[in-house]
Amino acid sequence: MDPEGFHEESIRVPPELAARASVAGAFSQESKRGAFIDGEYVEDYVYVPDFMTPEELQKHIDEHAQDIVIVDTAATPIWEDEHIPTAVSFPYSKNITAPVPLPREKTLVIYCACKDHEDSTDVARQLSLLGYRKVKVLKGGWFKWLDLKYKTVSKEDEEKAAKR
Image 1 (cartoon, rainbow, N blue to C red):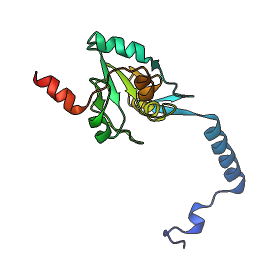
Image 2 (tube, rainbow, N blue to C red):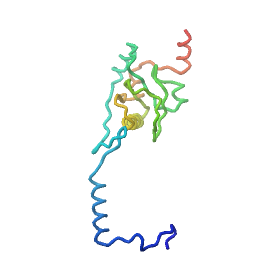
Image 3 (cartoon, rainbow, N blue to C red):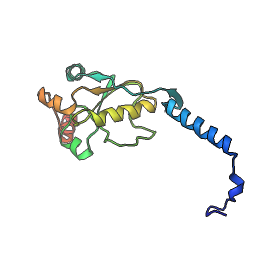
Image 4 (cartoon, rainbow, N blue to C red):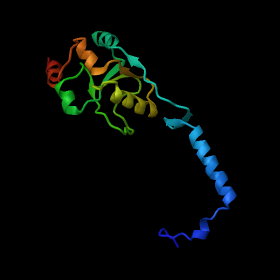
């Protein structure tokens, strides 16, 4: 008897069936790529982010657009110190699970301070797997926003503005 309590002979499979099963299993695993998106399996799924330029985002901010939510993936203390105006704090996580405190009906514009959008793209991918359809990544992220000398605010700045 093995350590898990199974008799060796209880799991014997004829060699010709075992060989077929392992070849079929290996083939099917290699040939199928996909993901479960909002509960449905989509074959050959590869996430490709949709981008929004900083100029487009600034225009939305200037117009006080109500149909977008700006999402900052930095750690909360960093967001509290400085972020894009109206951005909400949603710190990066390798494993986002439902429920997510972000609206599905609005366009989410996600940004990070990574060189190649790594965190924001991963957050966008994870949200798309949870059924979010209106997700964009800020092209150039935080550093492009700063390079363009667009306004940034702190949590304290926003709290003071809200009291006025």
